[in-house]
Structures are given as structure tokens and as C-alpha cells.
Length: 149
Image (cartoon, rainbow, N blue to C red; front, side, top):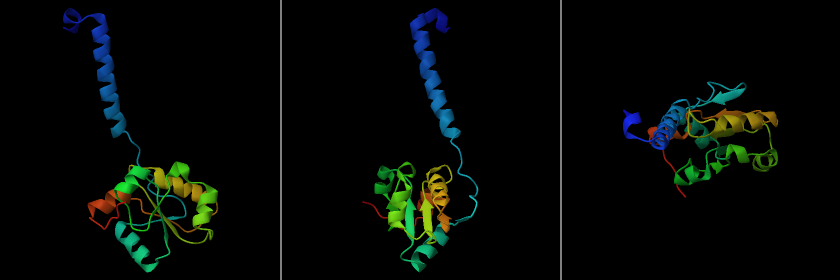
């Protein structure tokens, strides 16, 4: 049917557009899950994260999301450091004691930013790493308090 009504160039354009449309849909569906666990890292729920933050006001909380996401809302006291911007010198400035607890989070189980940050910190010798794996998605679904900038 297309062969009869459309010229060769129009057919190519339509096929290209359909390919782009379907490939972007598939890539969203194929977005990987964060690992179920990371060796030597404690995984916590939103409620456990709140308990830890309230029990330890000096707890370092790192939001590994993009700056634009952080500005729209974040956990109170969280420091925004995108995983690709996290470096050893910067983390040592924030937390020089490598045996001190650090809690990381990002957008949730379909986000790899906080797990990537944790792996970096572990490689730099940090030993008490905590992962709020459910991240921002779990936090907002449970309607927990947020801070906006």
C-alpha cells in the first residue's frame, strides 16, 4: 500500500521515524535495574533511612542524581554529587573518616547512579556504606518530607 501512494524518499522517512519511535520505547523498557545488593554495603528502606538520619544528625547523605532533579526535591541535608562528578578528593573533603557511615541514594531501583557512587567509595577505602536502594521513587511514593531549592 505504501509503495503505491508514497515515493521512495517518503517511505524511507516514515520507516526511519517509526524505527526511532519504537527504539526509544524499547530502550526505556530495557533500562537496567540496580543490583539487588552490593558486597559489604547495608541496604535500607525509606523508614530505616529516616531513623538513621534522625539518630545521627552528622550522617553524610549523598544524593547521586542530576542537579536539576535535586533542585526539584531532595532529602533534607543531602549533598548533591552526581556519580560521574564524584571523586576521591571531594569525598574525602566531605567525609575524611573512611570508617564513618555514608548513605547514598538516587532515583530508585531503575537508577544506577548511587550504586556506581558506592562502588567508587568502597574502592577508595570507605567501609560503612549504606544504600537507600529504593531512592527518590520510594521516598516520594511514601510521601515523606522533601526539601526544594
